[in-house]
Length: 221
Figure: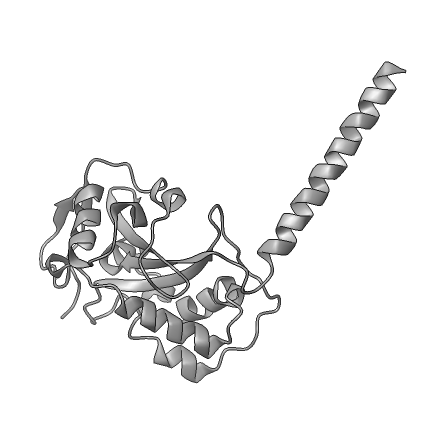
C-alpha cells in the first residue's frame, strides 16, 4: 500500500512539473514578452576561417573587408530566452533582406534571425530590423579593431575592456566575449528594450574562459 501511495505521489509530482514546463513554454512563445535585448556582434574573419569554402558563406567571406558584423538582436529573459515564437513566421519582404546586408552580410542570416529571434519581439519585420540598425548604431567599435591588418592575440578581458572604454555607460557586467576553439567569435552586449546599456550577469557568466584568443585579420579590402 505504501509503495502504491508513493508511486501515485511521484506521478502527481511529474504531472505538476509537466504543467509548469508547459506554462514556461507558453510564456516563451508569447511575442513581445521579454526583458531585454542581447546584441551579438560576430568577428567576421573568425567565422570565415571556420566556414572555409562552404557555399553558404561566400556572400560574407568574399572580397569585402568585414570586421564586426551583426549576428543578431536577441530578446532575453533575466534567465534564458525565447525563440521561434511564431510558426510559421510572418513573411519577410526581399527588400527588407537586401536593406540589411551592409550589417548582416548574408541573406540566410537575415532570414534565420527573423524566424528565430525577430518573431519573439512582437514587432513586424521592418520594425525589428530597424531596431537592429538602431542598436548597432548605439555601439562604437573600438578603433583598434576597425581595420585589423594582421592577426592579433588578445584576452577576453582586454576585448571587453576595449568596448567599455569606447562606449560610455557600458559596464563590464554588460558585455561578454565568446570564442570558438582559440579564435574570438563574438562580442555580446546587453541593452534595455529602449537600447540603453545595462548589466546582465547571466550572460556575462557565459563569457569565454580561455586565457588567450586570436583575432584573424580582416579579409579583402
